[in-house]
Image: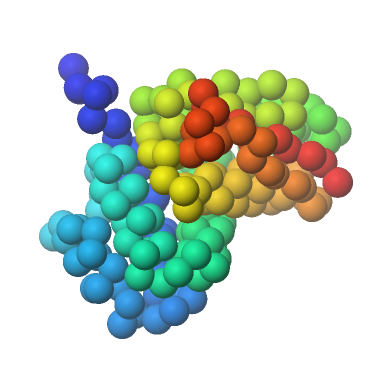
Length: 193
């Protein structure tokens, strides 16, 4: 059995952050950021679950190397890219089309169930629960209490993109509680436009 004290999350937390760095500030910034985070891309790329500490080190290196404004833009783009990957590889197209045809509230509830079921991709072994219009990550492994809250911006973008693509309209996602602000968990409120 895997030791859950070493929290692991899906590799897209790293893969899509690197893609966002390349897209927003250029390839030349990737190597210095990886060096600062003490990361080296494995041969064949990141394919397996990765320790959350590596993701946190990467997020901090992006923040330290590029500054808060650019780091937040990168995390938003990385979250969007992660959600697009999830939609392409984890939620079948037929299911997505069916969800678009359902009333918004019903589609929202079904998507929230799918998010909880597939939480390993963005929260590893953390306990994730959802209500009528919120997602809560207890012991969020990607929110180590740093003041930059980069992971939480990433989570907001993941959830917002998933909902907007599946529901087919603008959706607001805002973090209302954050372990980085000494709350007991990270909670994201979802508002349908």
